[in-house]
Length: 437
Image (cartoon, rainbow, N blue to C red; front, top):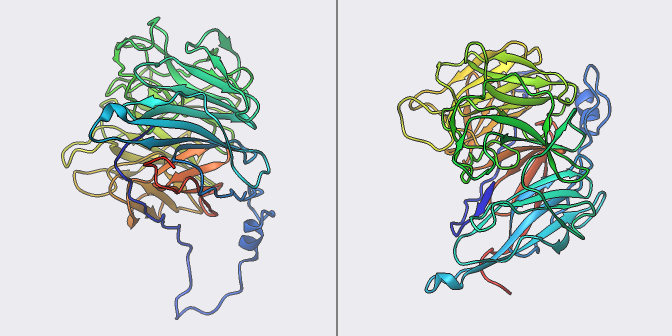
């Protein structure tokens, strides 16, 4: 969930992952034809067929500010827009007008379409969730205090919207293509209640925009009493309205599948209570659990998993011992070279050494290269996360979409990559978000 505020974000350029080069003392080498074919989307020797690099058109003239951008696997997408007028002398006169921008499959421009979200009066700002459920399909939930249960669903690219149910009902045997996972409370009839004793993973359906509980739940600990301040979720976990659970072991689902089709849920091992992840490779019909070599026995917040070409990375989020307090603490980074069966801890966060935070997910590249966005900077590693070098500004955010990892660079600049190596940059709504024409 993102919020539009009056504070202007600092726009920074995302540092690209660096490829090994030749020094002046090295003999010249012929060009790597495999890499050239890979960049062109052809099959490189010993590498799976590369995902085509789609070009996302820019739309700098869209009104207001794009505060959420999401894509389907075919390259179509949606963006929530907010155009705000603020009256500092009389805050009650302030308001934000909302709209939706839609990129149809194969389209060359973003179309401005009506948003089901109402105009917001006063200085409360914008608070909503957007999830793309496949070509032309999207789901929106308003998270304001006045309308915390309002949801809408479209199947025609935002040309029409229909109101939906806020509560998960029924079960589903498998996760359909285009669906989104979330963690939902099942022990309370009211999702706004602060007390919750049991959570289950729910599936947001691309067929009707309704949520249903997954029949086969990941075998993770999640039945102990929890304090869930659902109105202020962590900025990192994806999925509709994820619970903010502090140090309570509550399973947290990744919103969408990783590039290899795997679905991941983090939580605690039901036997030992250790930090663990569960993975399904058959659309949620079966799950396997593996424990992470955490540096502490205390329950964490959640684990952000990123599947790369030759390794899986698991960023363990949780409170840090000592040092400056941070909002998005990452206490360890783990790597698996066997698909998540076993793990090696690559990075342990200390009281001073950076990176100590993570915004979103790590971005795996080629070999041991990866990129990480924290509160104080962008960091790159060439050895699988054992060491990091600061390469750019902080406060960027990386989010998995079915099209690739999307980086919000602040302002109107966005970048997306299918593999952590090739990037497409585009810009949306670059006019000032303040003021009306």
